[in-house]
Each structure stands twice: as structure tokens, then as C-alpha cells.
Image (cartoon, rainbow, N blue to C red; front, side):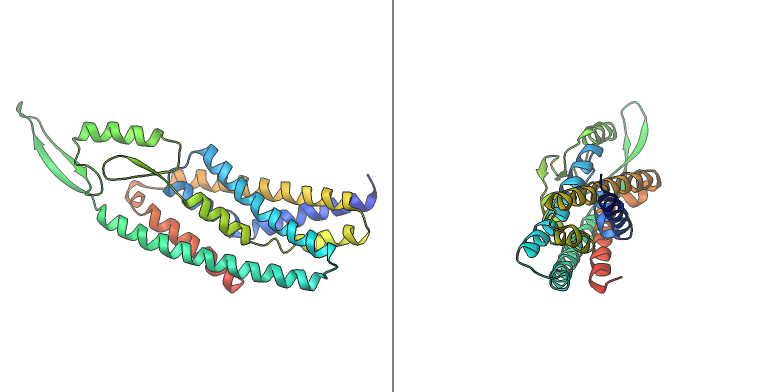
Amino acid sequence: MQEHLVLLGWTAASVAFVHTLLGPDHYLPFVAMARARRWSTSRTVVITLACGVGHVLSSVAIGAIGILLGAGVDQLSWLESTRGRIAGWLLIAFGLIYFMWGVRRAMRNQPHSHTHVHVDGTVHAHEHTHAGQHLHVHQAQAKAAVEDSLSADHDHAANGSATPSLTPWILFTIFLFGPCEPLIPVLMYPAAMGSWVDVAIVTGIFALVTLATMTTIVLLIGAGVSVAMVQRLERYSHALAGFVILACGTAMTLGL
């Protein structure tokens, strides 16, 4: 492999790693939603990778079109910056709506206890919420075990049925607008040299490192959140997820 291509490859890998690591919007929304909506590990990985692919390929497509049209780095950077602002505002809107819904859900799901006295004199108390059915404690435990075993992204309604969620599609749409600003300058050099093979190699390295970094951080933070999350906060998981997404969108918009 030519020396300049090796240097370009290391540059693309380094830029992709740092860009992803320093951008919490690349991973915190997935951690928050995976916890709130009880995504399985495999589902979390698939959704993270799908959004990451859309995130990278949209910038690659814009960069390729710009190169073919003879656009300069400044013009493409302006376009990517505009897309970034759009993505930031979309995250803010989605996070705010989801936060408000999560707070309302948490308030309606305030647990309270009832005491049951059996004919044999046994007395026990159990908690329930008005968001779900008033189940006997043993029935509730069985229902919880079934719900925890579900790996699909479902929001359980009051009657115990499941409704598919649009959340993954919303995140995917938002990440299509999310720009990879550092990718554009990295692509311009091999394109200026007239080597589309080098462009493809550099793009592949950037994409692989970005996706690997996103997925690894999501899994590591997700594991930590699962350990740290206490039952008392579980009721607020949706509200917390909305707040995290809102914060990421705000940070993107303000350029933090």
C-alpha cells in the first residue's frame, strides 16, 4: 500500500474515533432509549449501526456529489453545518416531546400498595400502578417476567398488549441529517489526486471506525446504566431518556 494512503487511512481512523467520542449525540440517545424501551442488546446494536450507517453515508453522498460538481471544502462545510443545525433542532423537538410524555407517564404510574388478607389468615401487601392492571402479586411477578423476556421494542399498554414503536425510525431520520463534518476534508485530498479507489478506502475506514466506536460506547455505557439504575428511578426512565436527547440536541445547536 502506498505511503500516502497509509497516512490517509490512519488520519481517517483517528478523526472518526475522536469525532465520535467527543460527540455524545452519537451514543447517548441510544443508551437512553435502549434503557427506557427495554431493547435487547442485539436490537440496540442493530439500531445503533443502522443510524450510524445513515449518518455516515448521507455525508459521503453529499461529499461525492460536491466533488463531482467541483464544490470546495467551504461550500460543503457550510452545507454540513446547516444539516447539523437541522439535526440538532430535530433532537430537541423529539427529546422535549418524549420528556413531556415520560413525565406524564411517570405521574400516572405512581405506585401504591394494597393489603390482602387470605382466608387462611395470611396477610401480604403488594404494589400496583394505575397504568397497568390491578394484578395479584404473584400474577404481577409472572407478567413482569414475561415482559422482561421480550426483546422487541414494545411499549406495554394498560391491558398488557404491545404496540410497535416508531422510535428507531425517528432516530434514523434524525441521524440522516446529522453531519460528519470531519469526513469532508479527509475525502477531498484523494479526490483531488483523482483516485476514487483511495476515496473508497478512506471512506470505508472512516465508516468502520465510526460504527465500531458508536457501538462500543453504547454497550459500555448501557451496561453501566443497567447496573446503576435503581428501581425507584425506573418509573422515570422515559422522562430521563427524553431529557438526555433534549440535552444532546441543545449541545449540538449551541455548538458545545
